Length: 269
Image 1 (cartoon, helix red, strand yellow):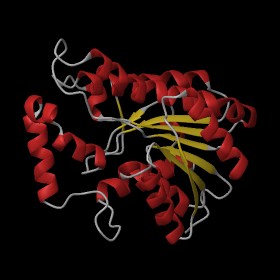
Image 2 (tube, rainbow, N blue to C red):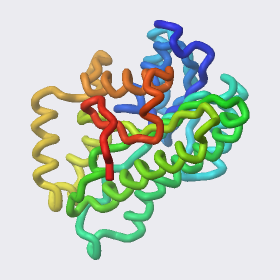
Image 3 (spheres, one colour):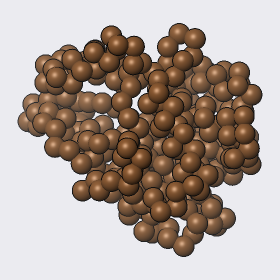
């Protein structure tokens, strides 16, 4: 435990496992009080228990990140129980649907965009006024190299991540002068629950066989996320450490940027 983020309050979405859990735990290790949120209570309880076992402070609030009323409730309860939100980590995401445009279900495709873009918009809108009033805050979007790649049969994910990178760029321009940092972070590759969902998806198996094969190789090699006993993959740890650095103000020049896994400010366009 350290006090680098002492007196800070963070909300981490999609924190029931994978990168969200790792980020929440590391923020807590640095002294922040954490609200973890997702749609499954049991997964959130596991995250809170892990943080508590390391001496951190966390609460779990179930909610749908795409539902405006749920988001307002999560933010209000966090402020009531922990204090004013200083750090927002928009991590919730979905991998699919997989397949070519014209064959995938447009409603499933649009639902993915709600997770990728509506959810960060709702949470950012809920916390930004008080961040601007205090002239302090950090908003992170956990993004992907797909933001700057054209990957056939993965249009929902690619476009969602591209939108996230542009969202951060626009947000940073709008809050310039308010002491608020907004950064899109490439988390790296690990066998998270989302990656496992990709492996198990019939659509991914049909339309993205090379991706599925690569994820299966990673799984076989033991490059997983949370193993039995709480071990964390190195990519999860690196991503979490980077989020702490940004939240602690270590990289002010990254404001409005997409940051690649090689720890440089990459052009995402």
